[in-house]
Image (cartoon, rainbow, N blue to C red; front, side, top):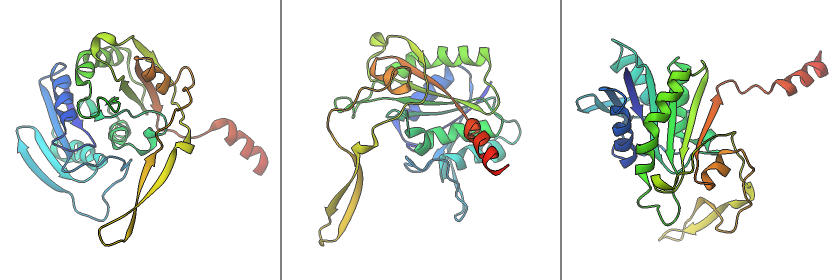
Length: 254
């Protein structure tokens, strides 16, 4: 099985080394094509106005000056043009990609692009807290990801569906199981603009979340599973059509 790896934290991110370890437990035909620099939050963007610079860093290891989506396309259409990968794995992201994160995440986007190209694709993310921010529980992803991926592949991944996996912020022995979840929703009132001033007195701004007690997430969601020390597995569709509302609009304009 040929496996293509990418991420959005960049070619030198520790989570990519973790992903490589996971992939090599599944196959010895593993290729890495990852962004030259951190591309967190770039979503499913393409580099249409800049050239893609490609550097070969070693055997089956490449860095692209571009987005995770660029990396998957470069890997499938150029580097591996002699034989497309059988599986695309993205991550392991440093931090969860749950709820609205899936619309912003470059990790999700890499798996999305693999899915668009007809390749079974998984996005893997490791949650952390303030206490584990500098050293997330990578061992949790390493222990559970290989078997999880094998089992899902054996069941089969439908075309136009990608699998989003979030590992909880706890050591492997404290994981309470696997939960198949829906995409959650955060309290967007927590998001705010934080103004600051540089050394010359010019203003600049950070997007930030307020540090206050949050409402417990709804049961059955990726957020609730992670909070309960469970691995959240969420099936995401490429088709974003809301069929019930589409029917209402058809009646309105019919």
